Length: 379
Ligand code: SF4
Image 1: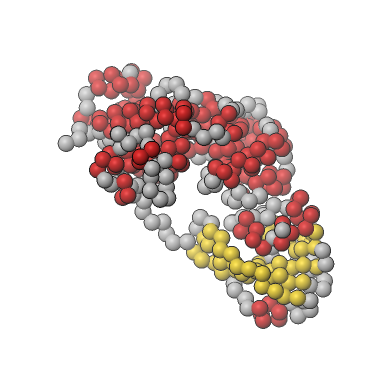
Image 2: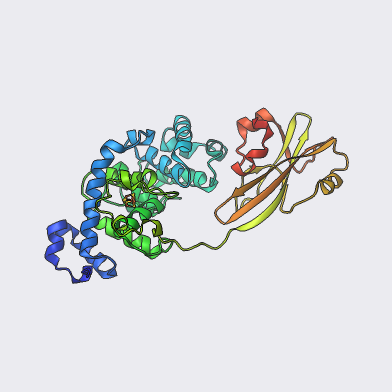
């Protein structure tokens, strides 16, 4: 029978974590989630991971720096985006805006253009806002502690934890879906990782056993294991895993059942008709409203309903040509767009829109990825 943390003697904790760990251990005892063995297992896992990481880590551009600005940019870009897709964006962004002050002084249009294709454009806007905060509230110096970093616009617990540990070597874990998956399996923990309480508990457990040095490498080793070995889709590569000898899920044969994640509410389906209007060499764009999904972005005009070709021809009686050019499904966090696009060549410009050439759009306008399949000016 596992001993609960609250039943363990103080001497055990001081032996492992010293007097300084007392506060964290007491906090962990109060939530009564983890046992003495859990703590020991987590501590040993981090030690093994750190050793493994030194030789197994991928060569990525943001791993060659301790500059908090660069690490921050990479962490925000990496949220919900594949590493391979981020590399070029990261390089281009830092070449164009290499410092906090250059980002703070950049126009929103430029920042969105550099972000074009990455999606979640509020992240790009928040980056700029946070850079302005750093200039005004921190005299242009990136803040050096978790609480101050956490207060910056668009920075949550996870990003504040990664920047604190990777750039400043502070013993603060960064817990995302990857880390929750790894820890659920290592601990054979069937708590629902969609619940805030589970994330809080795992964070507290890790914070308790985080070493005092090489904190950035520990953070990255957990992320790396979740990304390349204990993978989210498909079978985890237990045969290559440095934690195979410790992992409880592997020993108990429960790997396939973990992590437990409750279903979110289903995404709403929105049917759309996209109207790619062309007048001579120019195309119509319009700005989305200032609030809500993709707010303030430039888009191809569209309607929140499915229209037939006949209905579109009736809508544009003087059109020279109306041709269906494709369908596309775009998935956002809470909504899915089912889009059908018509290329419509018109005889005159409608003043509701701006009309630009392909080259002008490519150079000056950030059009969200949802419309990319229909952006014939990119081809
Ligand atoms: S042994 Fe398998 S399940 Fe356990 S942490 Fe490693 S890859 Fe994940």
